[in-house]
Image (cartoon, rainbow, N blue to C red):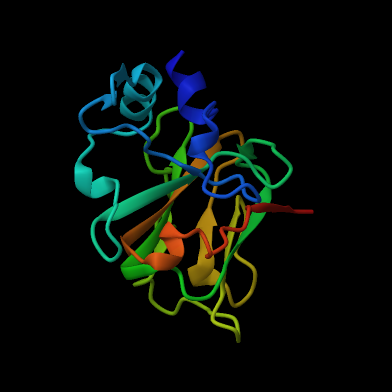
Length: 191
């Protein structure tokens, strides 16, 4: 049951925006209650998918705490597969007062993707030589092979036969996150 509730959110309130497959990875109230209701599914899914919860992980004040958005499927609704190549277009001006981070995890273990020497399993504001587009947007590539030329620092190596998911974390989320005016593009398979 835990894997089903973790990676297939049933609550419409879990969606970041209607035009995106990104969901709030953490919907569990640290008290494990929502009014008079115990959050049974949320109590199962978050501890299965990750570990630990605090009020700072569910930002409610612009510029404070953090928030976690999760992607488990591509723009076509298919699970992320390690043998496929994907691209994620991050719109300019990510709504984070402090920084943002994109981390990729192995679906079966929920641990960071195993990497070979020199490979990375996350890209963030502080990634050295991160290539930005002219408008300030950023393209992140995923795949089992080599990075597209010039995008070596914008690349996360995946493993054939290994499903994965990712979190996009915002540290100090700003108003554009709270009012949902900042678009989270779906991750697309490169064909």
